[in-house]
Structure formats: C-alpha cells, structure tokens
Length: 438
Image (cartoon, rainbow, N blue to C red; front, side, top):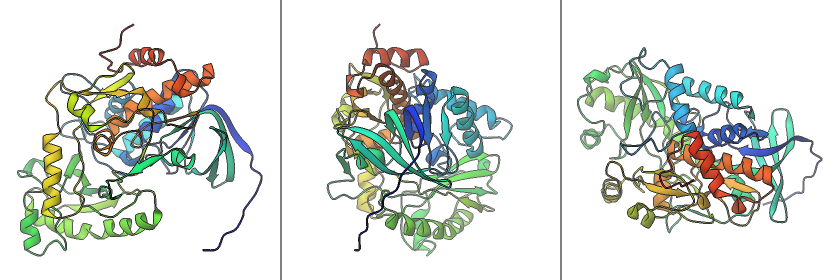
C-alpha cells in the first residue's frame, strides 16, 4: 500500500475547559453535567443530530432505568427521559408504557438541555486525529464542512462509543471474545400500520415456522421485536448482521447494505404470522448501524462478571446499575442461541438488586487529561453487555462530566480527582448513591 506525508497548519477554533467527543447519551450527559458545574464545554458529534443510537440509530426503547425500587439512571438521565415524554406528548400519542423512544422528541430534548446548560456543540463534525504531548492530549483534529481545525481542552472525554479518542491516544483496549469476535449488529427501523392491541403472541414465537416455510433465507431465532413509539407506529430492533467490526468502515458498509435488504423478509413474516401486523409497512431505516460491542478501553479498574455476581459495592461509586448480561448470539446456530439464553436468563437480578459502578472504570490508563463514558468504559465482555445500554451510558456520562469540570478547575489529573466531592455533586444532582457518606 502506497504511503504519503500530509502536513498543514490548523486554526485552534475552540480552547475550552472540557471537550466531549461524541454526542450520544453518554456525551450529552457529560456535556450537560460539566457545563452545569461552570466549565466551558464544547461537544462535537459526527451525525446530524445529538443522541447517537437512540436517535440517528433509531433504537426504539430504553432498557432498564431502575431496579424496581430505585431509579438508578437518575439525575440527568431521568431529566432527559421525562422531558422526552413531555415533548413527545406520550399520552396523546397512545404509547403503551414509557419505554418507547419518540426520536424527534429525544433529538429536541438533547438540543434544549445542552443549550440551556451552556454547552456549545457542533453537528456533522468528525474527529480525525489526536496529538499528544507526553502523557497528555495536546489537541484533537476535527473535520467539518468548513474544513479542518483543532480543539484544545484541559480535559477530554471520550464518548464515541467505540473508544476512538482513547485508542488513538494509545490507551490499551480489548475487543470481542477470546477470538476477537463481537456481538452481531442490528439496523433498527421504523414501521407504520400496526395494531398493537391485537398483538397476542411474542414477536419471535413463529420464526422457526416461517423459516421452515421459506420466508427467511437464514434462521435467526433471536428476534427482539417491535416497541410501540406512536399510536400505530413501531420501532423495530429486528435482524442480526454477524461479522461486523464497529471500528472498521470496511465491515460497516456491507453490514448496512445487508441490514436494509433483509427487511423484505421481516415484512412478510410480520404480515403473515404476527396478529396486529397484517398491514405493517416499512417507513425508514436508521442512518447508523446498531453496534452492540466494540472496544473496551483499559481503565484504572475493570468492572467484571464477579462484581456482577457479588452485587459489588465500591468506595468510589458514581452510581449503581442492574441490567442483565445481554450478550447476543455469536452466530445464528441453535447452540449460540442456547448460550445467549443461559447468560441473559441466568445473569439477571431480583427486585432491588444492583452492582456498583466505580469511578476508576471511567479513568483510562496512561493519559493524564482523559476520561471516558458510555459503551467503551473499562469492563470485561460480560459487564460491557450490561453497561452498554442508554441508561448505563447516562450514569457514566454524568459522572465523567462532573469529574472533568472539577479537574479543569483544580488542574488535577482525573486519577487524582477528589472522588468524595464528585460523589457529593452527583448526589445533589439526584444520582442514586446509597453508600455515600457525607
């Protein structure tokens, strides 16, 4: 492969206290939290809207917000959900329950909450490089329609989902299982013409029958299904694409093509086999591939399966969480489906149970002015499968924002931060911290 050297001068367009790379749920929570603490904040997002997989990715529903007794994704996470309910006019739109996501309402929620907090943000803006000065990030190189420019900050927060900023800064990471294989991806979608009152069976209950009838070209027994997002509109988390590396466009591109192609089969399946879906029609597919698993960045502590089993508590807790170990099948075989059921059904909590989320897991090793939040935080593969969902991202994002604001003010590295003070601020913001003592 040919190589060349490219060099040019860049303007430093932003010089801030805190720079957040990525405007998904973790990034938005981080930016809001840091700005509310008085920090000068800039956030860059590559898509045309804030929200990541919950908006551009059309993930149709929130996963577990609480343990049945306590709201665990409290503070900013709960504020976001409640404002989305209000903007989306949930009762007027006939949405059953409160887990469904109205995409346009969630986009506006993020726009409004970042603006009100005083956090500046830019869309359609991509990070293209990271430049180090010793063990600190000196600046990030950005690319946008107006051209390339640099951003300098006292503290940087990686909320890219894939850990791009950390990885490009040289922080060690792991990806996938022992063979590097990651969970399958899903292209989420929006559908109309559904009568949810007539849905009397599980969405996956007749998949094998439909496959035997020749409806599906390949058997995929794990069908998460539809969530209601308006009166007769459903968001589909349906269909798996295997062999996707979320950090490589050379696998993402064919995955998006395959994801769009498979919906003809799913439309036939739902119309023929699932009551209430006789008139279902495809409206749109997402702009982003739904990536469940990519890099796990090495932090000062790695949250692990034994912590989940032990319902662990930590002195540096920034929250607690409880979502099951949700590792989707590694392929479409019955054996892989059996492994999935073993984990998802066996590694789940009873009402009121949760595990601690330690501050150390959002502090990457090796770089002095860097934090991380969201799917890429320091876990083993099992706990990434629990922490990766949006409420979990709000928990780590909110804490990263508070910590970044403190470090920008004091001049300390994140690993030297006053964790007790971070906990105090989080408690004031409404975070559930039962082990915090003043």
